[in-house]
Length: 126
Image (cartoon, rainbow, N blue to C red; front, side, top):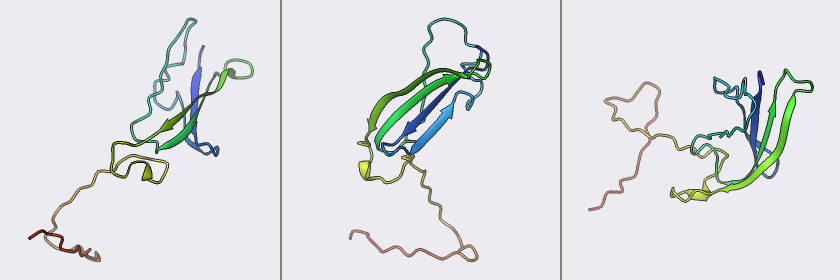
């Protein structure tokens, strides 16, 4: 089917869509020109892009070349729960995204103009 594409959302129980994507998002669209047969597909979500909690996964397929455009509406295909047992903060982490930023530290030879120092307490053990 020419121009066929897949569409997926991950939603919280309150209906908030926290991830929305279609197969055109990452070229090439693997479903464009899909022939007859039995096919298996996967949608890889980058690690730690979803926070802990419950989600519903919605899935559909469409093509603008078919009358009415919709090919298949599977609807909600899964309900799942994600937990974070690997970090100290774990499920107490707030927010929808659980990606961990990279923290870096570099010693400066002088204070940049307009910067304010952060004074840390001395927690050294004697």
